[in-house]
Length: 218
Ligand code: G3P
Image (tube, rainbow, N blue to C red; front, side, top):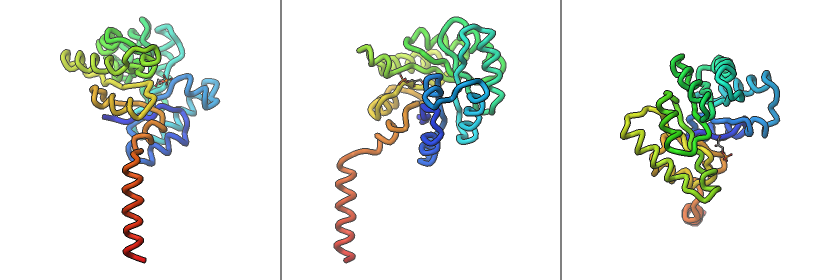
């Protein structure tokens, strides 16, 4: 399973990269706004800075909701760097745009996916990635992981090549469950990745090893 970090924060991306386990980055308009990036030139420059930092795929989302606008934006984004993935919302014109980008060899990430039916459409359009939003499904008392399992089963049965990118990940437990449920990629905040490190028995065990070593070597 690939690890993407879900942020537009350059320091956090660099920290995740430094761990040696980073396969890519996803961003969205909310994450860009959180970094105070506004205006087309600044946005394109920020995406370029992210692409220069990481070798793997970097998802950059279109703002337009009509086909022509999405195509125009997507082409501009794809010209930033070869590792740009154009992120497109799961709406009617979005499916059409993904289909168009696929025919042009431009990689896409179909975002805001909340059902297996939407995931089937994304795969039919040739999306490189499909992004089911796990946390937001859990937020309304449904089960996000069920959706990952359902999509994984359908894609395997139908031979779809679209990669399942578990998004809206809120905890280390979500990462583990995504891995068990058949996600190809997980995108999450750096804090959730770092949370995987934690276990009290590791801390206790390490403290004992060091104490024993110090006793024997004092
Ligand atoms: O990038 C899409 C997704 O990961 C957003 O997560 O936490 O805002 O639901 P969240």
